[in-house]
Length: 90
Image (cartoon, rainbow, N blue to C red; front, side, top):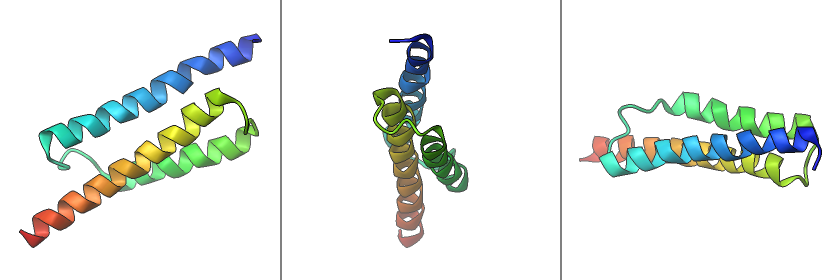
């Protein structure tokens, strides 16, 4: 591994971990009041855009740091929208 690849490990671990922790917190508290769906939607698209821009399609750091994080971002959006829809129906 060269230096950029080693440095790339940090965001590959931090970004999906931090995002997953937020999703877990939302699910545990069973509330989406603290989450802004538009913000997480934009984060998801930004992560996809950075993945394409970086052109490191086969590196696990890019896949984990950007694509997996984007999937979790979109999962947060889905949870927020579903929570608000379910609350409106109740």
